[in-house]
Length: 192
Image (cartoon, rainbow, N blue to C red; front, side, top):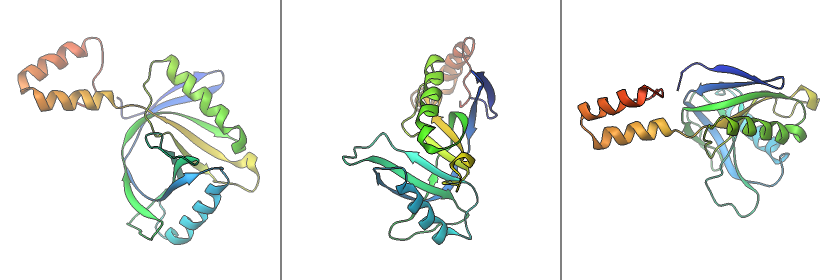
């Protein structure tokens, strides 16, 4: 997949297909019942990470886990160095590709914007990953909810990476090259 993004429009929405680079985040991950609970988590993170934050707040929904009470949510900030407490953990947030859109306004309508993003993704045959993200470009939780600016990221499944990894694991260089040449006539492989 290309390392730069491509803007696509649909009904006055501007969807972008782009690479999200790897970064280190300090985060709190635990079940969440209501969005407002995120406010306290971000306040706690800012308090502890204050001098080490190097980017906007991020919320990751983990749909690949089984949580009985609420959603498995990770709230975090990109940081310059490891920060560890009983509740806050630092980890690398993997690079990935995503279909994104900028949403402006109150969080109550954010779900509808995400639904439209996923409809757009689905109609283009892009396979989704299991960890959509919200990046709070202005916020989170601005005093006036209309001032919230959030980048919604529908993470995409890494079929190319898996395909190329399997080729590398099971085939010698020459047969692998032949397969990729044939595949490249109709598709573009970006990771091999």
